[in-house]
Image (tube, rainbow, N blue to C red):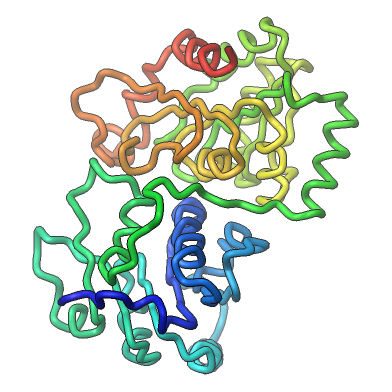
Amino acid sequence: MVPDAHPSPSLRRALVIKLRHHGDVLLTSPVFSTLRQLVPGIEVDALIYDDTAEMLSHNPDVSRLFTIPRKGRDLSLAAQARQEWRRLAELRDRRYDLLVHLTESWRGAWLARALRPRIAVAGFSPLRPPPRFWSASFTHLAPNPPLGGRHTVERHLDALRAVGLQPPSPRQPLRFVPGEAADARIAGLLAEHALARVRLIHIHPTSRWMFKAWTVEGYAATIAGLVARGFRVVMTAAPAEKEMRVAAAIKAQCGPELIDLSGQLTLKELGAVIGAACLSICVDSVPMHMAAAMGTPVVALFGPSSEGEWGPWQVPHRLVVSGHSCRPCRLDGCGGGKVSDCLVSLRPADVLAAADSLLA
């Protein structure tokens, strides 16, 4: 498939599809800003899962935000069919010239056929030929390089490159907009605790997938070291039961010096807290990407996942990793046991040294 030489002058409206998790969706934000830079006046819409909408809402590069529910919602088949039909009708009314599909979801292939844009692009693995239905659904296919060496943001931008839209800069930043309500609430919390950005450090110790998490003892020792250096530390965690248990265990070891906001914040408010800090310490999870989007320096702890694919994007950062020869294995813990030796073996001294180098 040969890309158009200069497709941009005739592009009026584009749809970007990313049906994945929160961090994956946030990492698409450079696609929207790149399209807006390359094609003045273009409208760029997004189609994402409803529970990830806060990753792109308020983003001025996103013209319209369309969402669909994840599978497993309590709807009858008839209700699901009506919902799908209404969403398809709304998308058809937009009359897209360009469709950019950024996952391997078959929904993107069906939508490319149903919406019939002039240009439709998706990725494929060059290690195996794409199925015939897939390749016939799109006008262009972008080869995805083997895992490990290319950041996810670049892989997203490759879809634009495949249709002749070269990013003006290969280092497009992420963008996350908390919004006025979130900014106001966090400003109130900072005032309540007499917190100033220059001495505030944020820690988010958990992840949706706990095999990406470090140890309670490691975090407690790190927090104690930061407090001894004269910093105030605020901890956040998602309200999920397993994450709240970890946060409670850390709090129990740290005492009143730790400001614990675990389970109390929306995603927008979490972004505002991160933006108010001078440093964020995270594992490979959505708060790490939010820190990058907010311009907050990051200390990132990586274990089984690849920092080459998922590391902090375009922000000052330090990576703390082990010397295990098997990483990144991309497994859910060693032997699938939900505990990653490459993470639990990390030392608080190394995390503190990484923090010191950024804070200096």
